[in-house]
Image 1 (cartoon, rainbow, N blue to C red):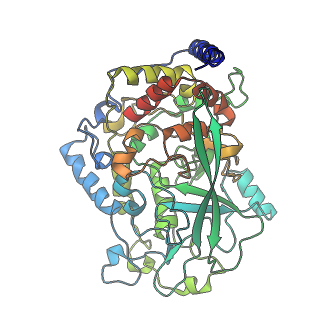
Image 2: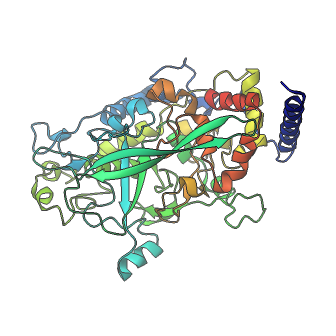
Image 3: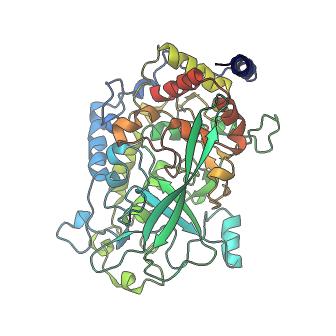
Length: 484
């Protein structure tokens, strides 16, 4: 190395080290998990395994294991088209994205986007569709918060790329990526990819000219009941829509329609926090993803559109059941109990020096401003979920994540650049459970570093701080995330 290069190397290293020291004192150090179990008494303490996300909360009683197991059976249940000899299982479709919950959330884990060029069904990925309001009635419903989106007229609010025999699917998803390179402060280059979606083989004509599309992968299922058990007051305490404290973070809750209470409620579930409860999230998934009617979303809510006359003429399973829906209230209740009580695996390697340093860096560079580490769950909820100290690393609020991640598709009060902060617990087991490490709402990030580098908008300062860390510091931060 020449004297000049040697001098530049030393100066550059000193500059990065000084900048890291500056970052380390720029933000308060938020709570550190230490020896605390990830999900209180509900934490799963078994060794990590591919079935780590499919286990019951550790504090479930013997009596509660029965509805949990029944709910698990419903989660993996394969629905069939009507009419069938097994009336308890008929009602599939006629248009759908999967035949069971488990087909999207394999082992209750994270979905992934289809392979490049793939034209077969994209089972664990869906394309949400909507248009701007077309008349005064639609504008009023949106303004009142009684409707989150206006469905695409011919295809509804979700593209269904599977169908029962004798009916064409709505279309196929073709995926390509555009890549660009970012350079970190120490010279490391990282390639980031952005998905480019094409919908082919449309069966009912072209989309409305104003159609908005958003690709979403199925999220992991663990800890949902505990997130539901966080008090509304604790969530709203982190709201700062006008950024009054001038920290660059202006998160706000999504106010959505609760179909059970028929009033506006705080959204918690879905990539844009579009549902207030697990029951509603599950019921909508039954209706949209599998084509199964239920009390919250009965026949006619999201069935075949007026453009799909053959679809409308096909038999369904509603008339085969006493309550007139394909998934009875008891079925939905058991499915909800199951998804409420999936255990969160405990943090691993917590005493590793690298994990401990990474946890402090996570706080110091600003990640914990949105990924709030810890909460105490409410007392007035299901006994097994009540009064637990939990470490989900989320605020469940909406944040502007920048143009790079924008889908330009509003949903209730979430605009086209906003996403709900996802919980991070269990993220380090994605490879073991799901067989991949593809992250973010559309699976574009091939690893955790890429996911961090896609952060923009309100998270841009944290991303820049990450980019300025040394290679060893970045490794420590990633190892902390992998311990969750």
